[in-house]
Length: 363
Image 1 (cartoon, rainbow, N blue to C red):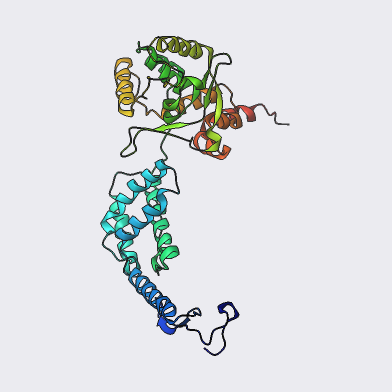
Image 2: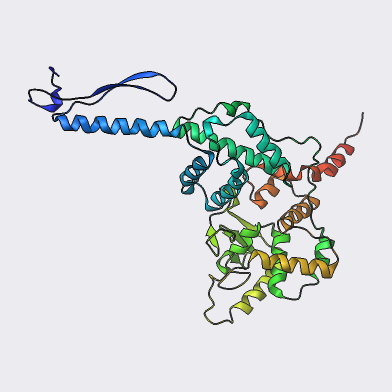
């Protein structure tokens, strides 16, 4: 090159490469490299560019399996470990598509996948979780590898107009009393009572240690959660589900007295300290142990079987029946939005609305 760029200093000549190439979409383009003092530097830049074109060319043959593997690596350090574990489980539902080249996937193949998912005993809500994850995967391919994926705009979610919305299962105060009266172990009485009267999520309850219990003010501080179904881990203490999940919950006096009694029992053990888990010792309770205990009490008491999470629903309905406004209920449960609370529990307020309108006199 005759004109030497000033940044190269005083030299007689410089070197660069120029070539033409065809991109993934068939467009012919020209590439010119940087200016170098040495010829071999320009040649090295040329080789690197050609290699990058070969890598890019190979990407249009990427399979669903290869894209999933890459997507999971990308997600691993960007989401909570529980979310990541859930993503791995969701990806198992698209394994039948693993060998398909992403850019060659057809809407017929996608609809066949939907039909297979529909044949499984899954709720429409979870099916649409899988659908959203599938779309996120394909959009990742478009964004990261410039893949040409035409079917995204043709994809539709799952819809079952005949599926009835699941009724919330819960215990009334009377049913819970029957359930808990069959329990003789103080630890278990305190555990199930904390779920029922304080509305904690299971992970929040399992993560509690004695530093979180304030017997002077009869409150529980919720600031973490425990996950014990993470592959390769016995259990993990994690930040709570959302920022709103960090909250201080008042305890009924009777529950506070029982927890205080449990504290005195635990404190007699050697090496006890306030970092011990409230509902066990140096190790937390396991999910399977909790379920077995629940099933045993259900059998003895004769009450219906509810899920562990439905003790939280039981707490919510108990508070509603005692006049709790939706805004305070949302704060008590640690929901990030009042709309979340309304979506779950709005039908429990119907009787209150009827009572409200009956107080208006027609003139």
